[in-house]
Image 1 (cartoon, one colour):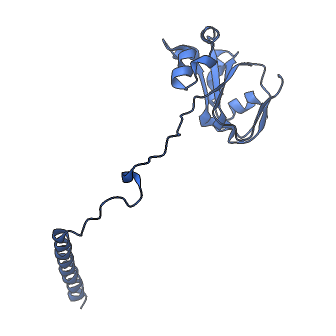
Image 2 (cartoon, one colour; image 1 turned 180 degrees about the vertical axis):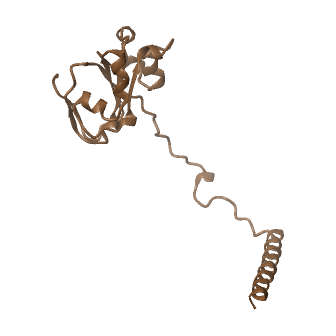
Image 3 (tube, one colour; image 1 turned 180 degrees about the horizontal axis):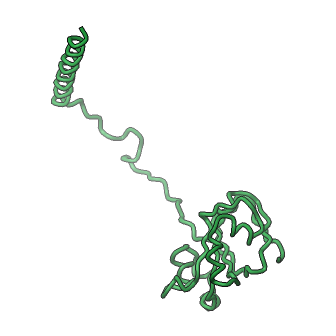
Length: 175
């Protein structure tokens, strides 16, 4: 076991990467529910936010490419040379796995921390629209269409006739 790693409450947008020092035949079992929790020394994780896979599954892409392109980690946070040296199994744990709770992780000795990376966020800020057409209720008011009113009246009349005939037919069968 190693020193505890603290996860703050309501942590958002971080991705922790761990290299696994484990035999491949045992690593496949780490995808079972609760296995990652045992390695991290905590309970109550969201298993959908944890990925465990062998690096060789990322053919031609590599762990560096997966983190930058697939996970949105900015290039300036990644050490391509160090990431390319990792050859075995890895475990990725997103902040959402902790469900907004503060936790102290006690890492198993088979886990080697690779890094904790901040995912790139989308900037949703924008300048307010200051145009006449963006103002509320700025669309021109259109008078009701006479043809549409006539079609609604005809449709209602047909519906009424069909309903009256249906009710009359049911009453005729009952009586």
